[in-house]
Every structure is written in structure tokens, then in C-alpha cells.
Image 1: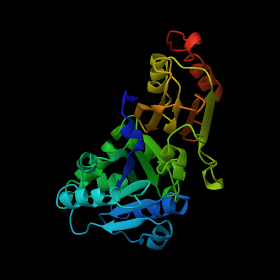
Image 2 (image 1 turned 45 degrees about the vertical axis):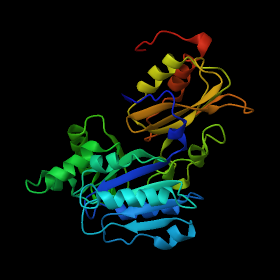
Image 3 (image 1 turned 90 degrees about the horizontal axis):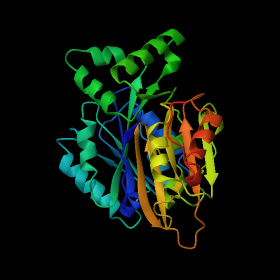
Image 4 (image 1 turned 180 degrees about the vertical axis):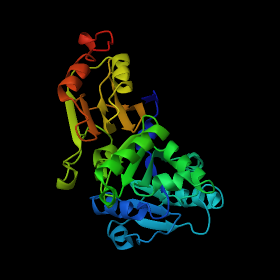
Length: 331
């Protein structure tokens, strides 16, 4: 896994996360966002759209959530509307009731990395790039000599690739396109879906991630629709060895899609540390002092079906406890 270890940045954990959702027209981006809105609970989401698909955005639901939507039409957010995007994000961040998360629905021709570079404003942080791919059409679209480059660019840049519309292909066709994506993007975190339905917390995250780890860090239980996803929760009052935990984080199985939690480290026991992972990127961030709160580790992993060996994870994390630290090994 790619290492992103921020040692001291309390502003990071307090910042509003911004998630970019890319994909071609017709891949199901708007349907995907509507699914997230339906399962977002009390989150106050803001949605910035840069492309109009065949499915209308559920603006009524956004209004009920006290959220907002902003349209950037007739151009890409990464170039034509870059300045407007900056102003929009600044306005959302500085409003009287700022959102708990911002979703940017990116134009299919845009460069998501350039959009991510815009998300450097004070009070905001880039959370993830999610690419929606039509299982039936993605190979043909990516292979088009005239328009395939931006399709491949969005897939390669993604933290998580949602292989959507798998209900429209046979099992063998699904396996073939999944193998193709894996070859194009080695180590890609691929999630299979129909009608854009994935666990909401895969993108929006639990509310504990917004309040700061240490309160209800296990987040909401998976819904019936999400039951096929794997989940691992670990709680301990013992301090962890920082280097050992960082090694543990860098060697998690590829099937792990998202993780969050509060960490209690020997190197700095007076401060809470935030652990946050999306796809292959993770961060360990020094947060606020524990204060009157009882210090403890509270860690959650969300993964693809059958991707977690709970006994293996329990054994590995136990090796990170300060007085139990062992040298890393392949076994």
C-alpha cells in the first residue's frame, strides 16, 4: 500500500473531505450518487456536478438533508471551470452550515488529478477518487483510438473502481472485464455493483470520521444490501508501537477498501492519532489531545467479500502492542 503518514496536522482531521466521482457518460455516476444520498443518514452533503447524465440528481433529497447542489456545465472542472470550482468550494466551506462532505461529479473527459489539485483550500481535504465503469462497455470505450485516453486516465488515477452494471453481463464476461481492469491498473481496488449500489460508508464514511475518532468509531452497521461486504473491528486499551502499526497498515490485504479509527501510540500517548485509508492510500495523523477521554485504539476495516481473515488480522495487530512487538515476517 502507498504510504501517506502525516505526523502532526490536526487541521487535516477537521477538514471537510472532498470525493471526486468520475466515469463516462452512461456509466451510472448520477445513479451512484443518488444511492449515496439515500443512505447518507444525517450527513449534510454538497454535490458539485460537471456532467448531466440520463438520471436526474435527487435534488429533493439533498434539500431535505440541508445540503446543496451546484452545476458546472459546458466545460470541464479541471480546466474551463477550474476557477469557478475553487470559488464554489470556498463558498461551500465558508457557509453558515458547511457540508460534512463534498462530492464532485466529474465530466467524463476531465482529468481527475487536476481536479484533486484544486482541493487544497483551507478547511478542505481530498478524500478519494472513485471511478464508475460500465462493465458492459468499458473495454470498448477505453480502447477507442480517439476518445479512450481520458477513460483510461480516470481508471488509472482512481483509488476505487466501481465495476457497475454487472447485472447486464454474464459471469464469464464480468470476470474477463475485471481481469482487464486489473491488468490496466495493477493492484486496483475493484468493487462490483449493480445500479450503483455499494456500502454508503465506502464513500461517505461513518459519522465518527467527521466528529473525530474516539466516539462511536465503529460507525453504522452494514445494511442488508451491503451484507456481502466484509468488516473487521478491533478495540484495545493498550498502547501500540508506532513503527509496527505503520508496517501493519502498509501490508494490509488488497481487498481492504476503506478503514478509519482512533489510535493510541507509545511515541505520543497524550494525543489521539487518526487512521484513515481509502483504496491504497492511508494516513496516520496526529490529532487533538485525549484530554478527559479514555485513550484507546478503535479500528475498523471495510473490505470486499471474503477478503478478510479475522484470525490473521487479530494476530497481526496484536504484534503491534508495545510490549508484544515482534519483527515483521512474511508468515
